[in-house]
Length: 118
Image (cartoon, rainbow, N blue to C red; front, top):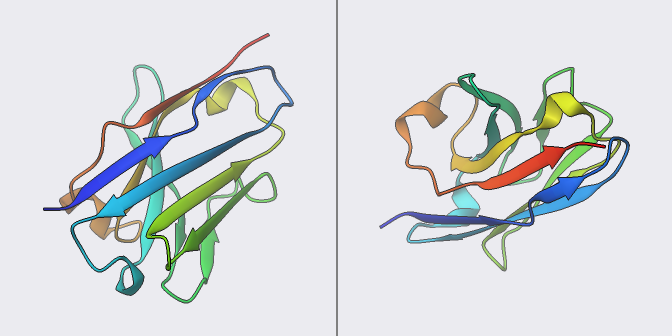
């Protein structure tokens, strides 16, 4: 079955950086669009970035230029490089299969918590 295991979250000061990883298994990783979504405290899921099997990326405006999504198809791993973090980035981060529309029908892992606080 599909398994997605996120890691790399933690507490970081505003302006800081973090790198998240997502180890995927149970499906053919290299044929799927993959996305990162997040859920801030008290809010719903928010899609914010995706990457195609060949590396074409998409971002929402609030993270473009600060976040970079990447993948290693040989390792079945998805990455998120986050820079210049701010309080609004505090959330549980999940990797999911699919694009900004289809991810809602896909399973999620347990996520990894990111807290941006001084």
